[in-house]
Amino acid sequence: MNHIVLGYDGSDFSMQALDWALDEAELRKLPLTVAHAWQWPYGEVEEEAKAHLRKAAEHVLWHGADCARSTSAGVRVETDLYEGPAAERLVELSGSADLIVVGSRGLSALPRAVVGSVAGYVAAHADCPVIVVRGPGPLPAPTDPGPIVVAGREPDPAVLEFAFGEAALRQVPLSSSADLIEWAARHPAVRTQEGDAVDRATLMVIGRTRATHLGPANYLLQHAPCPVAVVSES
Image (cartoon, rainbow, N blue to C red; front, side, top):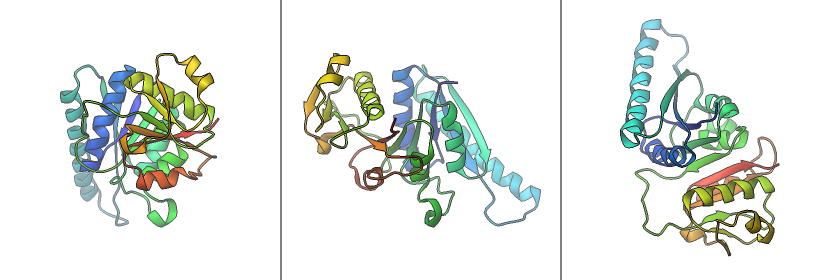
């Protein structure tokens, strides 16, 4: 099933990711799946205690889905509640998704020393593109949005295809230091410009060099001034 998947845990970071995921769902005319994972962190426990934790998780998920439905009446919103690590569930859901959207903090389910942040783990392992929305709070809605910026001087075709698609959906220019003449001819509706315009970027797009290895994308996920899309290279 084609859909957008949002990793949601009720934090300010995931609320910002929710805004972005709704935009993607509206622009792509796809349903949105709000996903939340929970797990008992203290070893063996009575079922009653786990039931209370599950109830709390259900409330978090309900809140996210309710926010999504009240914000955008045109998007079909579905939910996914999972007992277990959030990162693993999001990667599993990526097999049927067009896009995963996750905040840069929150959803901290797996040990950082082992796999890094949940956002980083999902970006490194997902079967579809992943957009990591950095920072807490609501996304600003600029009257003059900046370009989609393609990172790297020789971007992979899969990266360019995704970037041009985003630029077309959002009706903003595409900026890159690479030669885009051939790609611009295939996408005449998208205005291209030279340079990387990072300080004004709406979204930065970068490739994942090989399975489970982020490469230069890891730096952007930590330091980019805007959301970052990580695309598995072809």
